[in-house]
Image 1 (cartoon, helix red, strand yellow):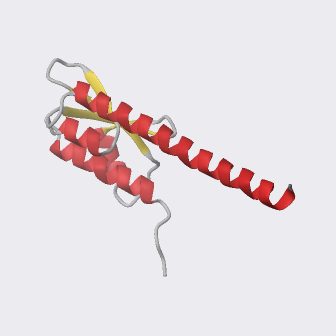
Image 2: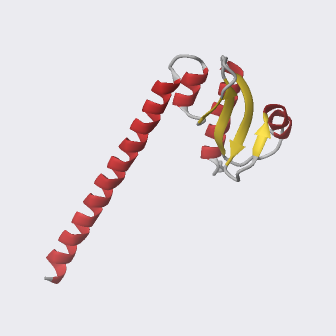
Image 3: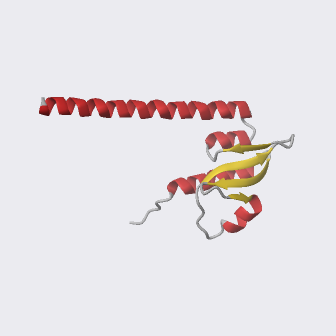
Length: 124
């Protein structure tokens, strides 16, 4: 049974494509994990039949001419479609970052507590 090991790259590529197609703003370029910035037209030509690295940002130009970068995730898609403001987008991104930190700390603390209890039970 074969399965793809680059699911994160594929998901970022799918969301990036949705942002490009459904954005109310003008998509300008994409930033990749290897710090490569590719214009939209070049991206469309390169993406045919080729594996690309992880997309980290989609760069959009709003109505005032300001360039705004969004991550290729559901929050970025909602912003690009005009469902939320940029302020709400940043708030959601910060909220997810804080949530990740709390989950990481909770899991790490639980692991350390179990390790301490195991060592205490068997060796003391």
